[in-house]
Image (tube, helix red, strand yellow):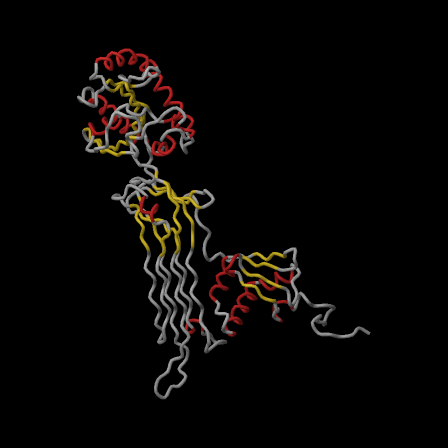
Length: 457
């Protein structure tokens, strides 16, 4: 059974807003005391929060559909309905969120960082809030808005300072176990490590994390082996440490060839920041074995001539580890001193505002017309179409917003089929324009009105 999941799809549904209440105040000797219907409660949000105790996305793998609770309806006496509860979903640090089109929405780094995956619908206004000098006793209320529904892709990219990279069975797991409190599974066959392991190391006053990235093989950047599944966990690391097996028994391998193969795969991997820019340190592992020590002595000078810091080590006997750890700490300290203090969480793409006032009117080829826009579609969702007064209120709102004037301009006439919105939630009706909306557009010669039949002399 899978114990580590780093890519999932989340279907988030926020809570619906509660409906407004239609009520009239009544008390002794005051039969009609005016409207007093309360507003509906707001729907709950679906919120992703970085939790340091969470290291995998496996919970979303088993339960991808998550919903927040809805708000309750308003009541008489101007009592507003209670809001729905937000659904808080913990995610690991380093979770990248993108939409169904692949556009990155947020990059969550730092404990407690929050991202609203789906926003709850606003509660509908009660008739008390809808009262005005012209409409003293509204006999209707607004319905609550539906909660937002979103399909999001979550991808985990481990947040570590140093990545140990190398062939399977090169000794990366043994090395991270030797320098930290991490206890990964260790064996002498390929692909023992099936998940990235994280260890915390302290050298003097420098504290840093080390990631043991599962083994890479030729073609890993194209999907061979396990490399492609875990190369993303190298992206955030500041320093790369090559762990080279100096005692391999495979005839077609040697430390220099292994190094070149891994470097090629790192270069081919498409990362946001090219991996070629990261500092490298080389650890020649397994010098506790006679053949390993001899091989390390043969290749050390060659790698040093290429400009790399090279350290012969043994994860089994801990020989050479202090020098390697000091080099790691020095590289991390240098990297941190060069970085500017910036907000680490990145919101790359902001969803459009829910109260966008724009709308669009389009004439279709079949003679119908379609009206789209966040505000007008929200008005439709708030309308109780079983109440004629509520429908009239919607017509007034559309007229004030200029929707009817725009319909006239694109060719709509009385009886034209008009659709507001799209998909299953759209409302279709035969249009009956108001007098105010089209008076100046239907005018003929000065003093005439084309809606009044008359015969020309």
